[in-house]
Image (cartoon, rainbow, N blue to C red):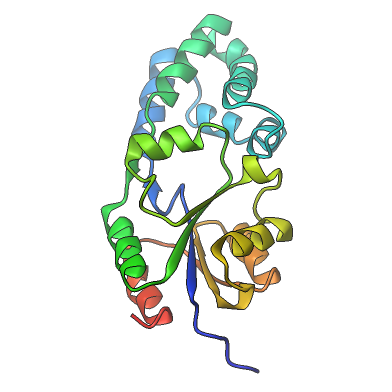
Length: 207
């Protein structure tokens, strides 16, 4: 088997890698509104609701309206469902300081870093709120591209944005499906489990 090229660019997932979410936020809202445990996240992540928003055919607000409609009955009405979704969405997550430190270290070494996200049209505002706008070289937003991970076309566009061939890009994501998709597209890909993985990633980048 041929030895893989050393990566010259890094592509990092946002949600679950660089951005963390506190599951207690949603759980607390669900308790207040009498919703089943996990109802907010599970409903919002339904591919039939999410896919149009992360491929640019529906706005973030439009996606949330779909979530509100789906939760109206269990929440006891549309207004209660809307209030629950708004309270849940008010939390925009937090930056993992270990991952951000790694990204800064990699960029300081001259390696280009891209942020890869299946995101809605709210992504730019979120990055500004989290102070991440200037922390990466490129942002690869599925809703801008019109195609989402793990599609091969997504990764092809990401590599073009980074200015590196797929064989020289290391992709890090917490989703097995996205990791497999990246490998099919010719990238090196690593399944993220937590900050303990940074030692391996530094070695892979020759740090």
